[in-house]
Image 1: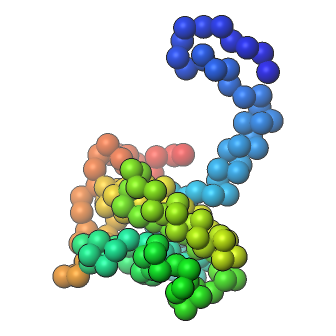
Image 2: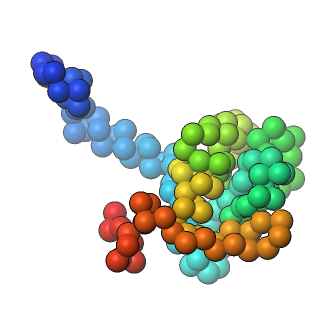
Length: 159
């Protein structure tokens, strides 16, 4: 790797060679998904090919959760995962949002138990911010999308 001498904070550390970058980003996609992809898979009808797991507390679950998700708080994963989850089916975990690593801790616990697992980036926060319906203890909510998180005049962001 060629060293870059610059005061530019972006290039102070040189970008990785393309083959290393490709391996890193390919691996990242093996570990993560996002709320839009999860929503599209769940809306497709039929079996999405994974189980979505909300790992937050019961109070948080009651405040709002993704329809169809399984509630399994992180602390209960080691003793209850096999009760709720089929080891042959991939799992996608989520927690509150980007500032919470609960979904990461739950994903680790599930992987250590032999599950194939991904983490849903953005968590419940971005599920709601992108305007996807969610369930609460009192019924279903369908918030307006935050225009800073979704395209204003398009069906999707094109990414």
